[in-house]
Amino acid sequence: MTKRLFFSILTIITMIFSSLSPASAGDSCSFSPPSITAIAPAGGSVPVGTVIHWPFSGNPEGWAEGKWLECNGQSISSSKYPELYAVSGSNVPDLRGLFLRGTGGSAAALGSTQEDAGRNITASIETRDDVAKSVGQFWKAAGAFTTSGGGGRGRLRCTEGYVAESKLSFDASRSWGSSHTASEFRPKNRSVRYLIRATP
Image (cartoon, rainbow, N blue to C red; front, side):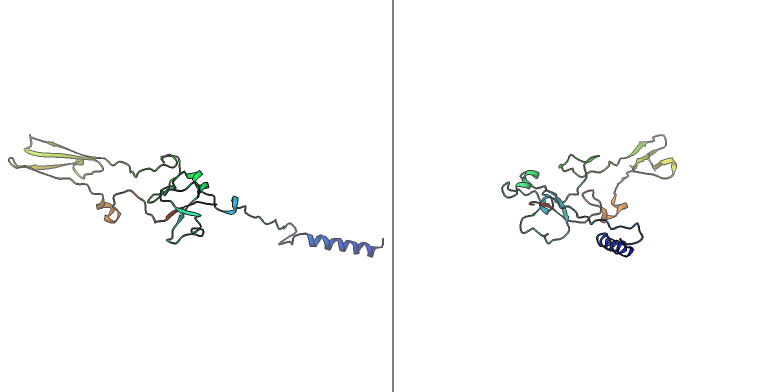
């Protein structure tokens, strides 16, 4: 074999392998990994029973075909929604006005509704009459109440024949402001619609 024929064959082989190899994007160590395709759920859709937050008044794609239902406790037919019926039973969850919470810790059992609650706040005021020092009243605050001066004690004095009256009130809105006072405990929030996947 002549040198010219050898180099011609070598050139052809090099061209063939160059066309099969991925293009280099840097130095001799660079390579192009194969593209990765995400695998969709069975049936190519969101799994039945999935709950989503929908922040719009309009409805998502598939609503008209019955693929989504409002989580308002409505009853469902086992013949119309067999997959959802197998997951949720005869009614969809009623999530109106509720926050969702992960299981564990102080959360209720899975699927149960937990009433609103808050940590207890305690306070006390101690009073007593001091007859030896005419008609008087001493008081001492504890807990959420507080006093200043006099070692935590105050004194009301009056002359004999006169009844001293006092009133102590507690109003949290004086600290928080009326705009942050309501009939429930709640964090700052924004309203959404809870929708559940009803069909594949």
